[in-house]
Length: 514
Image (cartoon, rainbow, N blue to C red; front, side, top):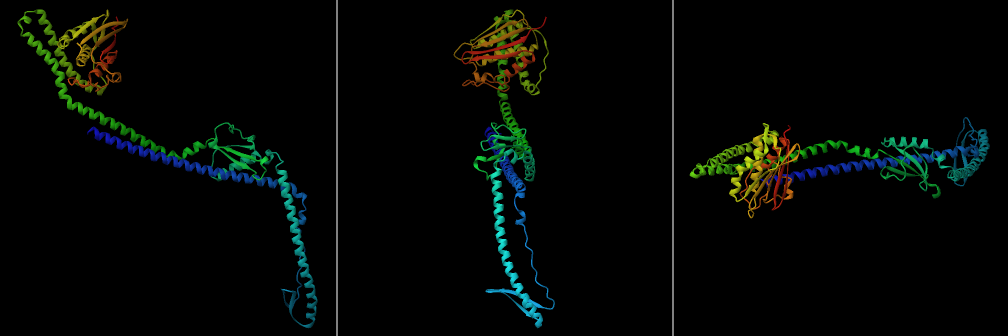
């Protein structure tokens, strides 16, 4: 897959996850806002009902106190009623008309009619009495209304003079609040308090917060007795300590959705990382043949050069030169084996383990052998390789092959990243920095490494850009291999570098305990 395709896939997936998270967050916000609005409305209805009940309690109190002082008997007095005579055997009807008191239509004998005429006069007198009775009732109603108005005036004048603690009993307030909140679907712990017009506390429940605390979001205020004068205004304040938790619980069913989205996001990120890594591995595989050719070319060239020197009669006549060339061929053969080993290290990195065969090695002698072998290559580029064995104790417990490969790798890097305008100068130094530690320093005067790249040079597959130098080949495993082997051997390695001034690698290894 092309890199552009991977980046396009990454952008599309990132936008998809971003949109999904945005929708989920907005949905949660809407749910929580709706829940908070419902909560607020329920509390307001509850407080309205509670304050109304407190007003009714106060009215009932004054009515019960003052009712004995009012002449209730005159308010509810009833007048005795009159009934029509029962005249058996007579049919009659009574009606009223405009301008007439009333008339009777009578059917019967003369004696009966005479009696009825007398009774009719009585009935007319009685209808006049009914009229007078109605007028008396109207007057009585006006009188009663005046008495009720007087009672209301007394309630209004006396109520505000009562202490607020008596007007609003804390036990009743808690009971009313409990009932009304439950009726409105709010079953949460609460604290309450009553305050005067200046905000001074009259009384509060046990855990009611101080006024200075930031509880605006969980504090609800309702005016008590709104008909009181401004100088006697008071408020009921209710605080819900667990309101925020209650609101958040409305969205808890979305937690699995967020969890699944997070899992998908992690899987996506891991997939993209693997895709980029796989792409890098594919690129390495495509370049492997060319790089391997270069890596094997150098030792083969050295062996070939040594073989050509053996054809020289003067060289064959010199036992010392023969021994030197023989050692070069031997070391370059080892280097070929090392190149094969380095390729195999790729699988070692994946397995996170390496096989080593520890043995006691004199580091000074081992490094001196490597330096003598490598001198030929350095001198080929007009450079100089110097070894300073300053360590008096250099016996270390290492795998000789891996230890040799480490030093050889550092020297090879010094040659690869040399400066074209300056003769190559490499110095290898050993020193005892304590009674139990050996320091090995490999310093050169090459192109150096930028500070931002210095921390990455020991990463697997990482290669520092060499600008216009196109002859530098490799797998990006050299320094990663060096660091891993030094750590396996119980030591440490660090690098110091400056652009155009060279690089210094410092290895610390534990000395063999005597």
